[in-house]
Image (cartoon, rainbow, N blue to C red; front, side):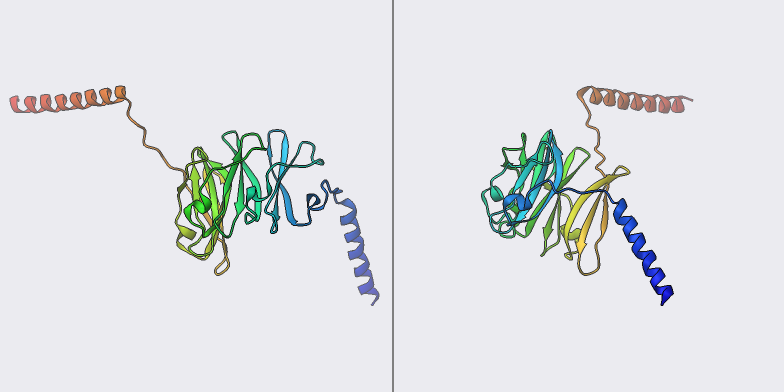
Length: 249
């Protein structure tokens, strides 16, 4: 009994030391930014001189807030970008001098919005990339001069889309990488010159996929074509001369 008491005392002392050495934390917003409907919020990205945060609000739609000092916050979008079914929104990435934000919309499909100044927003994709089953769109990483976005699709599997200008999008992966159980995909990080994406798979377990960058074929300029033709002519002339010498010899 005494031994158990001593061990328990040591554990409690250890916990006390751990708690005592932890960094202090201070709340820097009012709960829900003053709206209890904002049940989830979190800072996500720095753009310009502001810290941005998004919210999840199932009543009036997700909101975007920003702060210049980390303690005073102002909302910079209309709730749900004017659609209450845009339940959540989160500013996630800066690309080409613009800030990009995503939405979750289980009715018409996820949306991508962007802003050049952090306050004025325009939508830059079609809802769900043309498929309402893509209930979320999540631009998250820049790779090889493209902005990449993942989706959640509980029917055919999550997809990966990319854009070179932030407005024209192309799908670059099959749904769920060929497995519909990969219901969401998230291109997340660049490492070793390649892009890595994760999946949610509730059946066999989440997966990590590696995307290798495109290797463009250099385009020939007009001068390049001239040089190529001259080289081909020179090579042909050399062959003819060799054949004549062979015949003459």
